[in-house]
Image (cartoon, rainbow, N blue to C red; front, side, top):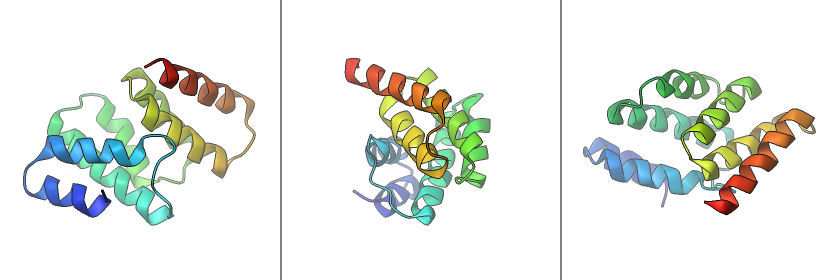
Length: 121
């Protein structure tokens, strides 16, 4: 399961399967390593979400796709993912934000809360 596979499914019109693969790639602790992979994931996730009609969430998704190293945009995305019930994705994104700006108490509290919710789901 790779970003390339998800891109292929999306290109072939199987948006739902592409979305499922993207979700699996980001399920905590995530399978993305390089900054380039993060950017590609967010860009494809934005395209997929747009195709699936994600409503107001698309603004947050597109913002982080443009700047996946922005801690503020990562946090906005993670919070939106929590609101949508995607706790595994949110936890992975909170973890990335913490790696970029370690030790922020409020962020760590949100991360811990997300992990707790994830264990209940």
